Length: 123
Image (cartoon, rainbow, N blue to C red):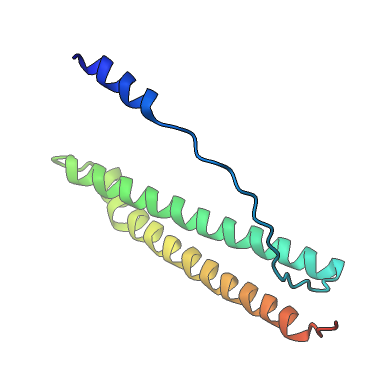
């Protein structure tokens, strides 16, 4: 028996199972959110994404500079400037934007917690 015949044989011997519908329900909480709060959350989400993206881009630029310097034998004057000034600056910018992104993420979480805590449950 070949490999193809074995694969076909196993496919033919499989039978379809029965489908059983099970009814279910779940409790969902809803929160009253004003238009201003939605705008604020949207802006905070955008700020978090932008800050982390800019930080990651600066880190990638720093990493690219470090790789280029490591692979280059002798450095010209321009490369010396990039190594001593631009590379550390890119790393500091990356850290700064990541920290700002983390702080904004934390503020966003606090904002959501405030909305949840101010919501009064009614039956």
